[in-house]
Amino acid sequence: MSSAQPRVFSFGHFILDEAKGKFMCGSQVVRVRPKSLAVLTALLSASLVVSKDDLLERVWGDAVVTEDSLVRCIHEIRRVLDDREMTLVRTVARRGYVFDAPLRVTPAEIVTPAMAGHAEGVSSARPCRGESISCRR
Image 1 (cartoon, helix red, strand yellow):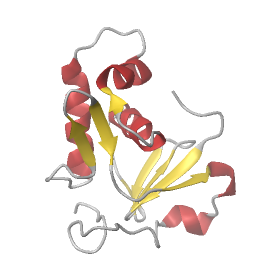
Image 2 (cartoon, one colour):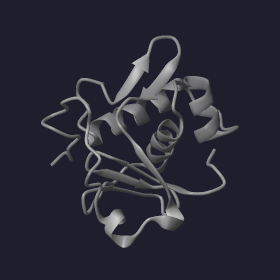
Image 3 (tube, rainbow, N blue to C red):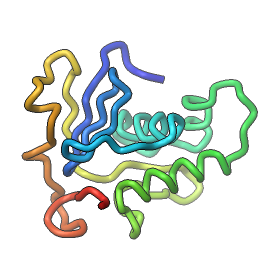
């Protein structure tokens, strides 16, 4: 489920452009499956814990899928974020998942080309593989 106005989410070196369906690390496109991108967008859109049932409904709608489909998407997101310690996408026992890092949200219509090229100035408040969330090379 997306909001009426598309947004651009920036954290660390990453940018997710909701309108373009584009996930970037610096100037490089990060390739993830569409469902994983939809799960990440749902997590970034929420400020609190998102239940597994809510994620399944938002991303798969009425399609019959098992929770394993969601788990695979979370695994892929953690892999591309290099979130080995599971601190960015945290599992909240018996509740769901939460994105837990400083996040800048900008309406897509006011994002300039310079802003879209990189997420400078958005750094992690806690050390995370160095001083900020970095791209997996």
